[in-house]
Image (cartoon, rainbow, N blue to C red; front, side, top):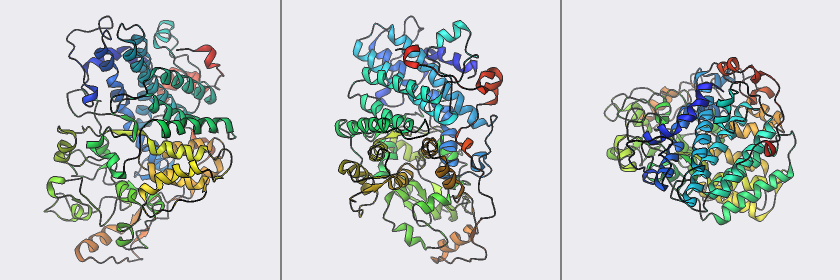
Length: 573
């Protein structure tokens, strides 16, 4: 990893004291004169000193979060992107930023953890803050190992800098990295309280992440490990039964500004548009929203859109159905995930009476920039959008700004834990009739589809498909492929090669005629899916992305075979 980004962790205190709060629960005291000798002295300083770990170090991961998690996996169409075509290389800017962001998280969490150990603050607060640090560190390593495969372990920044070994690190085998993540989470759970202020990481948040780590680690050796799956099930079940959390009644409510700290959200990046600290804000609406969606001139994502493959996973076939089919569809997650003709949203553009997708595209009185469909796939995203300026004020109590909003990015939700439990309870089998596993699956599906009847058994494919619909656009799908590719790469290769990852022809004419006349008339000679583009060349090596080229130049060991480390003997907290 780049020296500057390892060194970045040493500057943690300066950044921590200079950032604005993410939410009321992240308020910090005003510090006029501070350094490592007089900060982290009181309970308030300890809490404020970890607040920025909820946003700033993660800032440069935002675009990679979508491009790796959703474009690479076939959920999202991003024209001319190497993630669309599986041609990502080590010079790709978004991959580089993602990598450096994750190493920055590790550098910061290491530094803050060390400072907290020496703090004279109360034991309970000090432990809570150290537990938060370790959970974020574990999450960063979880992303690194699933993205790049074998990676170095940086346990202590100071030792690396003093010894001058930061550019001499060897990659560590994936299985050992997972063991290090588990060891880190075990310590986090030992330190964290069972409950905390709304939105902060507590014991059950870390435990939910532990369940996901074990589900992923279960296949890392090439065959599914029954003991790891049982551990995943045990941890997930404890969260389900004892955390006191439950799913929100309305799926779309999870992603609204007013519900940033909802009980379903276990771990989230908690951004703020307040203050002058760049990197503490959410910028995803700029990348994903249609031009003109807000008043700040910062939306340029309309030309991309939800993939045809994801549309069909939700049962939508634009050229084979009429809009009634999807408008009256039974899965409420569809409209909460993708905009299609006929869709309206009461929670966007509230001051204008709500947001109408086709009216926005074609009515210049409603939207001055209207005129043509932008999305090549005929659908735009809904998640990660807050709406217009007034929507932001209504939801967050303060204004958004250019490329700055306060909408939380949910990284681990309770519904994910339900599905982890359902899958883990199958063990190495492909189905289960276990009542508790079925109940967990049913809770997720029934919320989205009220007519769904509880089944008497579920299959691995049921859970696999459900995870896609439940977590679409939440940066997760590619990592599901990675974990399954550990033990069944051909399944993942076949599915990715057979996806509909391309665009449509003629949708603008179809949509405009429907908006003006109410008639949905498909001209098969002009309106069709583009099947001329070859399927991506997915191979077993595709499930490991390349290290940034600059990192390899600084540290040639990254191109060598990984080493084995007995992490529990080498490292301790």
